[in-house]
Image 1 (cartoon, helix red, strand yellow):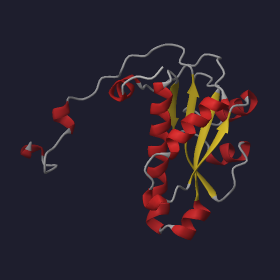
Image 2 (image 1 turned 45 degrees about the vertical axis):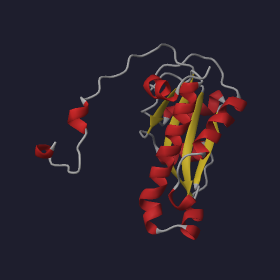
Image 3 (image 1 turned 135 degrees about the horizontal axis):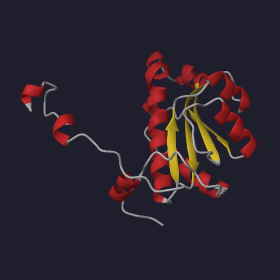
Image 4 (image 1 turned 90 degrees about the vertical axis):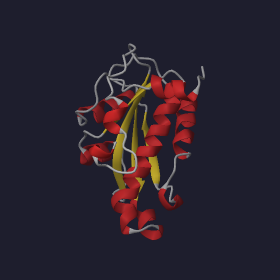
Length: 178
């Protein structure tokens, strides 16, 4: 079920309640391929995707992630391989680039999921030490964010957005210059 890209953007929501429907690894691989197509600072491609689809492991991750709700069948940890960044990148890459790259990759993944009728939610509220231990993530990987994935239990309405006039500025951030 593919729809127009602008419709996918409008359709994507942060899903907080999931059905028990399992997501195939082939579908997950397609979503990770979409994530890989995101821009990456200096083409480092330092992101790493650790997919938890074993329900016991997912439940353990959820126990240490207060930002997760609704019992997702899949949790994807997006991490940065700092060893690779230190070899090929810069301090700026470590400080800012990795998180920016992870966020853009996660957005690609979430839009690809929405295109397939799946729900996702980006999560930053978790205990990184516990999640890294549960998922056996190496010390040289920095956990950037989690993405929950599954079939949404129900359709949610789009949250209200501020009027464009409140967020768009031309040539200056000075509100008097709108």
